[in-house]
Length: 181
Image (cartoon, rainbow, N blue to C red; front, side):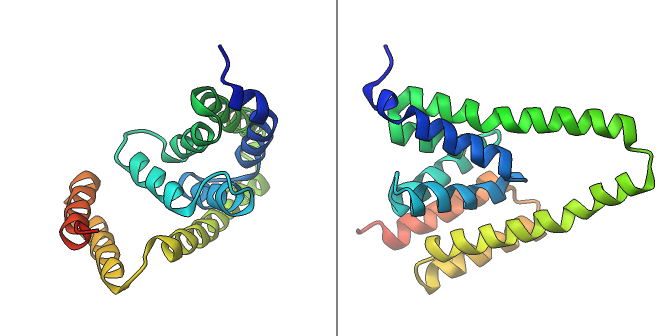
């Protein structure tokens, strides 16, 4: 049986995630766009709940942006909302990649086509930088959290420590610092 929340919200979930899936580029950068669209503009979930979902999906293997989308859909309309959000988020990317693959197979050897593909890289970096700034601005509340953020970034960038141990260490530091709350 389809959840009543999905019956009320299926159009907005479907159209919202089709839009994000079709208009965004690159994995982590999409999370910032989702936050802007669904948390800030549409108020589907609180900032705290969005950041909790972001923390949760960082512990899971797989595509984080897709998992955040499924999480947001789940928060909005339950299990079926999560499923609908996931499908609507993935379908545009699939269609776009299929079209680009066919175009590249046909025209990829032309110099102009190569220039277009190389020109997309800086755009992705810029979108990612804005997303990191927006998420960081909301997730880092004080100097101590900023220090943990900087330490985690340094560990990830310059050591073979790995993402899971870094997340576990940051979580343990958070419990030690804020466990009394």
